[in-house]
Length: 371
Image: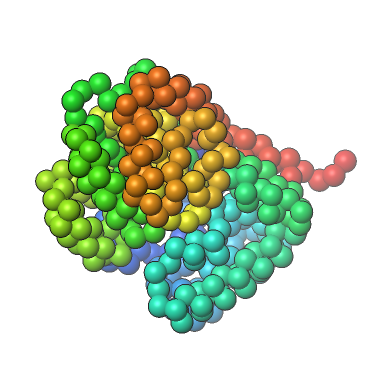
């Protein structure tokens, strides 16, 4: 399974007698992301069928609903991660097992950056609007964990109980101390995440070109899987070639969370993420800050509120704004030092041991019968 998922489940398993996980089977083009194995011995995996496109998963749901109907009666609670197209159906089938939600994004907001045809985009928005409404109805009778202030505000009015957590891959050992970066003649930029259009990678490559036109010797390392096959990655390579920066952009593919991935953070000078619209809070920002790496990010979603004073913000969809934010860090060592220090302070609590222990304690309290 993906390393971020394996790390989280291993951390949860430390607090459980038994952990049962219901997961979709990866499709062939997703196998590159299956880079880790679970270490915990008290985890049982159950299939929900292949990770097909949403219409196929909904159509085949009757075949797989038995997986939840056969939920062991000994389970104390079922945590449903969302947004998910199957969340309302899963919640219905789980009854009478106590249901909790872990909401890590807003699919309806994410539709704003989808580049589908007008008809498909309309259908997607209609589906996710229905799904979000059904998700809220489940929340009315559930404990809800959310990972950013925006989601906390949305659920606070209607959910049975809301608790803000941090979704992370970090452990307390995953830190790297330094006071500043950009000390050499060359600036190394780093992006970590899925290689998809919504992540703003076209804008990052254009910003790299603008930096070099401004006389800054810079390069870009892209670490992450090509989630839609290789079509967008090829488009990205073609853009880099047209702009004359192909020799300064390196694609490293999927790298599992842990020492291999964290080596990239330690070698970089600035971490950059340029999502076009809200998609929750990128856990890669926590990883960068824990490795004393200054961050440039687009002002979308909960990023401005979640990490005040630690991230250099820029406008989404604007390579010029991204270039300007990068230049502010390259040319201002005092600002880099302030951002690094503040980021490391914020990341100190964004570790799995702390966050999972807090989640489990809240969950246990919710399961206790009233006095």
